[in-house]
Length: 321
Image (tube, rainbow, N blue to C red; front, side, top):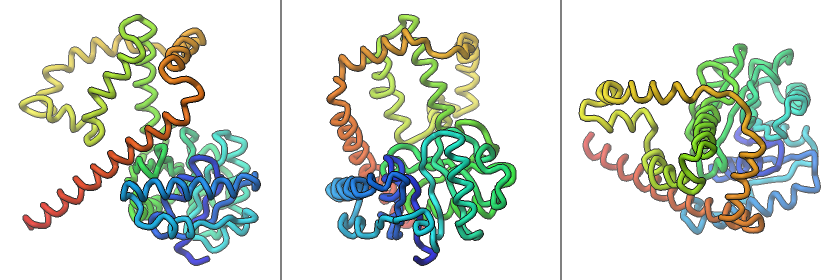
């Protein structure tokens, strides 16, 4: 393998998605999983996803993409001569420590090793490793081939070079990297998502809104804006004088609201069971896979729209230069 190739360790849903991301960008991928019997099906799933993306014009040649993904028979074979390693094993600290210990021992010292963990800090699984300076988190949103943001988070000892190299790689393969400048559990995306979920559950539990109404606030409200701009840009545009004007108008309102958002108790099992049952009325358990496929198709259509808009804006910018 040449130094442009990528090792994807763990062939579950996120591993499959990462393999697709890298192969879509023209990189050859070595895919490995300790459950070797799952690998043939993983490759078939990736090929099927690529064909769907091709229908939406998000992939040029699905067959060529699938042909760039190879199955490795061992961990050593998977990482031999690669430019980067993306780990995707279970969200479990002992398992992360074990796989990083193995990878650090066999991966060339010049190669960065990234983890797809959703919340475990780099320092937790890399402390004590001889090569800890090249270890970091590269946390994607799911699925990364449709939602391009990637949070890059290092430990205090992760080298600036390792972070900048992964940031550059992610841009090269079409992702949108965000540097987490100080290590924090859950990084940025899941801390924001968690805050929204906690308030959503509180509002439903308090009888202020039902499940579908809550989802409608995002589906037909906040989510429409947030699909192409963040909350900071949103408030900057929502007052005549910009962000400072918005904060002047609504800062006290948000202060009063936040005073009621102080609970750190776990979600009650009673509430979880109630929400689960309401969701199963809306989407039966046997329909979940079809609903996930529907979600991904909507994301594909949105990705096409955003891609077209970015190309138009880029062209307009070039025309005015």
